[in-house]
Length: 419
RNA sequence: GUGGGCGUAGCUCAGUCGGCUAGAGCGCCAGGUUGUGGUCCUGGAGGUCGGGGGUUCGAGGCCCCUCGUCCACCCCA
Image 1 (tube, chains in turn orange, red):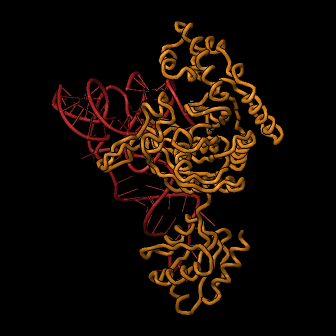
Image 2 (image 1 turned 30 degrees about the vertical axis):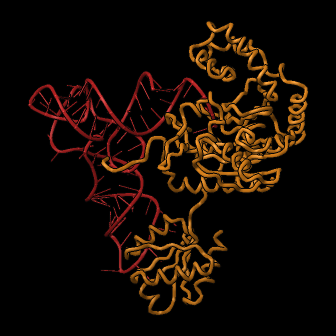
Image 3 (image 1 turned 135 degrees about the vertical axis):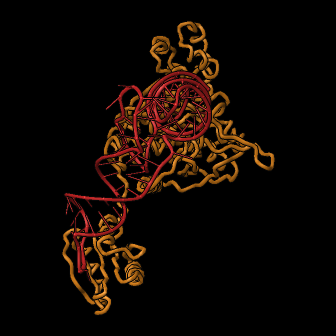
C-alpha cells in the first residue's frame, strides 16, 4: 500500500454507515427539539484555556489534548468535548437563561485507539444552562432515556449519583484522601498513581486488588449536606414519577473535574467489551463562571455515536436507512434518453438513478437490481421509435408498455402498488 | 504511554518443514440468453504477500527494524 490512508484513530465513515450516522443525529435533534432544545454549533478548536477548565488533573487535559500553536502564536486545542465550549459560548454571548441547546459533531482526544474509542469521535449532547432546578437534571436524563428508546435500545441501565455541592465535595475529597493515604500499601500501583492526581478517581477502580479498600472507603452520600441531599432526592423522585428506572451508584464520579451534584451514566448491558458506557453527564455549576461568565448553573450530557451504535448492533436495532432510489432508468439507445427520463422523474418528485457508459441491457438490469429500485423504466430502440416506454416492477417482474407521456403516472401506479 | 495478537486480491481467509508461475469463497466484469435483473453455468480482470533490511542456492513462512490494525491496561464516549 503506497498511497495515503487515514491517520491513526480516524477513519472514513462510508456508505451505508454514514447514512446511519446522519439518521442518528437527525433523530437526536428531533428528540432534543421536542424538549425545547435548539441546535448550536461550537467551533472545533478553541483557546486551550477553555479546556483546561475540565480539570488540571484529568487525563483529558494532561495527556489527551490535541493542542498546538497556530500561525498567530495562539495556543489552541481541538475540542475534547463540547460542554466547555457551550459554557464558553454562554459566557461570551450572555443569552437569556434558561438556555437549552443541543449539539452534534466530532471531538478529539489523543489516545491509543481501540474498539469504541477513536482519536476523532462523534458525540451528540444537550446542555441546559441557567436553572439549578432538580427537574432540569431529571429532564436531561429523561431526554437521553427517551432517545435510547427511540433508537430501539432496550438494554440500557442508568446509574445516578450526587457529588454534593462545592463544599461537600471538598470536604469529602479530603476525608477520602486521608483514608486512602492510610491504606496506601493495600492499593494497586495504578491506584496509588491515581491517588496523587485525583483521589476521587480511585473510587472508579475496577481492579480486584483495590476492591477491599474501595468497598470500605467513606461514602460520598455521608458527606452530602442537606441542600444537596434535597436536590438529589427531588431528582430521584422525578425520575421515579416519570417511570425511568435507575440505580444509585455512590462511586460514580465520572472523569471530569467540573461535575457537582448530580452525575449519571448510561451503560449498555448488551455490550461485552471493555467500553460499555454509552453516555453520561451531570451538573456542572461553576463552569460558566470559571470561563469568565456570570455564576450560572448547568446540567447536560453527551453520548458517543460509536458506542451507542455498537449497542444498537448488539441489540439488532436502528439499521442504516435504505438508500434505494424509487426508479432505475435503463436506456440502451445511447444514454441521452436516460438523462431525459431521469430528469422528468426527478421533477415529478421521484428519486431516480441510471447507468453510465452505454452498458448492455443485461448489465443495466443487473445494476438496476443492485440499486434496490422498486421500479425500472426501460427505453430501447423500439420504444424510442414508437414514443413509448416500458415500466417494470423489479419485485414481481410485471411490466407494461405505455406512451412516453404517461410514464410518470405509470411509475406512480407501480410504486403505489409495490409498496 | 505499557503489554499481547494480527497484517496475503475490493472483502473474509487458506497457503503444510523455507522449494515450481501465490490460491479459495464472496464481490466485480463479460459471455451463455440477438431487448430484461435475482437462480444456475463458463470465462476474465484484480497481488510490491504492509514497508525496509538480514539469513539462505531459494523467503508469503525465519531474524531485526518500522508502519498499520485489533485486544487489554491507563483513561474514557
